[in-house]
Length: 334
Image 1 (tube, rainbow, N blue to C red):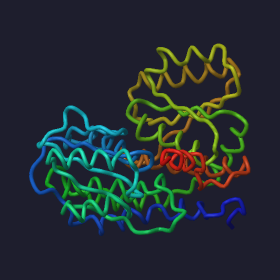
Image 2: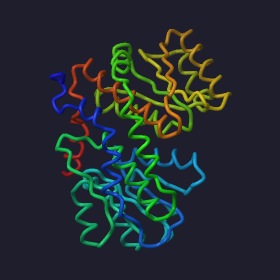
Image 3: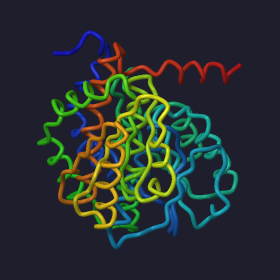
């Protein structure tokens, strides 16, 4: 049953999430580049950029490595060239930073592909005869941070269709089936009740930092309208952990751990958890489920989705809208 606070039924969006992968395999199947490239630059903001970090994490665990640079700003990197593929990712199609990157890449005649649901980016691609992938319209309240299945599959499909990586169909279908069998809502709800009133701190290892811990932190920010932070092992052991000797506030640490991590990192996690608990800082450790990197990332993200969803309800918040972000966009127009 939908909670009355959940006006846009985000719970159903989370439950339906695995369906995105199969849909995207279909609508992205024919989009590819016009000429060869030796590196990829992905320009996007917010939820439109998050899947790029998962693409990097996935490819780095295979023998199909290709340099990928993720740009969350208005300017292309100095490494951009005519040997680059520039992917412009804006779910709304109107995000000003990637749209400006599109204009700069077009002016330099770089190879471009657009990803969007609608908006200015689709119009530009049609006008300039640039290949693009258009997402289905899942309604006005659907948030880009929950379009990860569409966006990730689209990005990987472009690389596969262009001959830069192997066919991804089986991996994506297996991932969708794996997620359909997960049942982590009650666990997420219990954790939300435990951490309510504290600032969540999300930790993982370097491998899962941007592709998991950072995304969970963002989901908590946007759903609960409160602060959350993230960091990674082993780097945090060389600086941030000292801050737990004299914490100024109430915190709750959530550690997402791959049981197959480097044994020294596994030892670091156990020792760090104990040291923090000795300072009366609650710590929860979760072992990521799955048989490969994609499954482990998305099992962690699924648990994070349920934590963020139920924590929003604990705080009396509708988890879908992001009013401060929208207010900023309006103010920028002045």
